[in-house]
Image 1 (cartoon, helix red, strand yellow):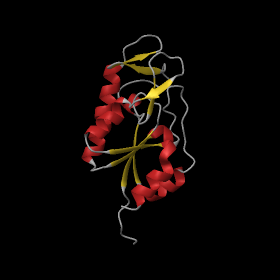
Image 2 (tube, helix red, strand yellow; image 1 turned 30 degrees about the vertical axis):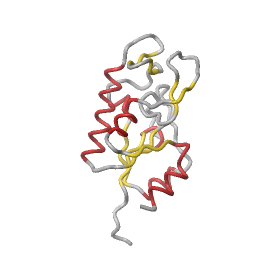
Image 3 (cartoon, rainbow, N blue to C red; image 1 turned 90 degrees about the horizontal axis):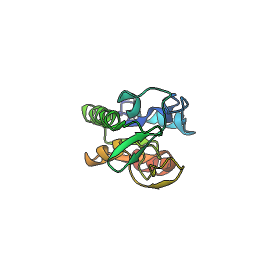
Image 4 (cartoon, rainbow, N blue to C red; image 1 turned 90 degrees about the vertical axis):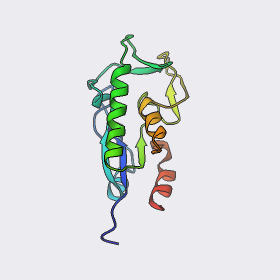
Length: 154
């Protein structure tokens, strides 16, 4: 139907090709055109939105805090960015998110273990946890087929 509204999607800016990663690069996904054509996109980068620069030192969650690889406590920036992402979702009645796995903000299945040794553990990033606690479904870039199947058949 020509008049049917596209579902709204909160999406990690890096997955859309924005150079917001800690190293100044992006994580453009292969299915981006398909997603762009089927959803109304709301781009977020909780780390940048929370006040961190691009590029920036990599950060990992350690307990309830987030630290850069130089030991700088960036917890406040991560929580501020998560709150901004949640506000975007709530203000726009967004129920779906597609976020970058592995990220201390956006990870939904895996995050780095906090030791900067390139080891991933089961866990959620700060933003993903906040979104899920507010009944927003979060998928990651490794689940795009499942995401599209679920999101477009609603």
